Image 1 (cartoon, rainbow, N blue to C red):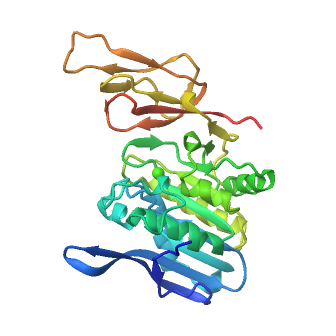
Image 2 (cartoon, rainbow, N blue to C red):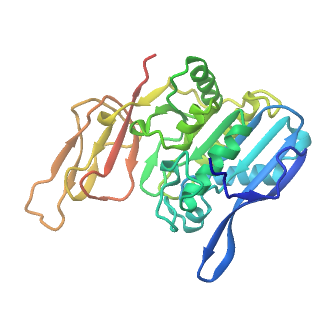
Image 3 (cartoon, rainbow, N blue to C red):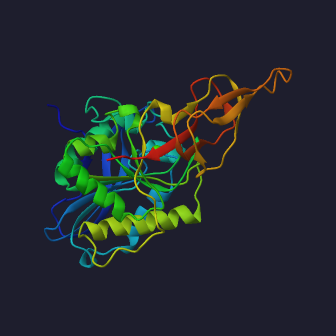
Length: 333
Ligand code: CA
């Protein structure tokens, strides 16, 4: 099997803090022997657990990268136990462009796992994560927010897992995040995400979704900061008791296609509820207006599942197939 072409000066086995980069060759018109420098920090103290902290999976989701930057600048190895591998802007080209997908190859990093060492830049980066970083680690934290197209209830995310023992460890770690909401998300069962690949690699895995809409909110940064530190306490990397969050409800799930309200027409979507509203299957969810044809009646959309409005499309204009709303339903064990 072809090895990753990513290379770094960082020594994963050395104690102390190393702030650097993993480099991916990028031979372009104005830079024949250049590289793309993806920020990589390793902080290590002894032989405790190894945890990967990842942000910038999507380049328009900011709370995670902000909190990971704080940890890179503020945490000394002597204040922790084990090893942190921190990649706060893993899909660097997308982060630089503040876009969900990379401007280099138009790929969504989180749909390229396990990656391809012979593929395009995004595929080379995901291959580095799955083939070089995952084998070093015991646990993986992937920090997402809603991104440009979605507003989401700040939440800790559970990846579906077939192994009951790993599932129990994942649930405990997600619980430890102390987010206001916790939800299992299957991404339509897509196996190409970094969290699903981490679970298959046997890593204790925690995801997040913070507020979104391509901006930063103070509350989401606080939730994310508390959550990351709590997960590191839970895993034994940091000392001390968990910092309690607000009383959260039980696990919810975005189980299948019925959880999504999809646009059936091109137009402007008017939602009928705010995030967090309790809704029932069959109830009107919103309607699509035809601003260019005001004599036409709006088309109503209905919920396909009962639960809580978890996510909402941010831009008003929709085309058929756009995700307008997402419902999280109570997860039954
Ligand atoms: Ca995301």
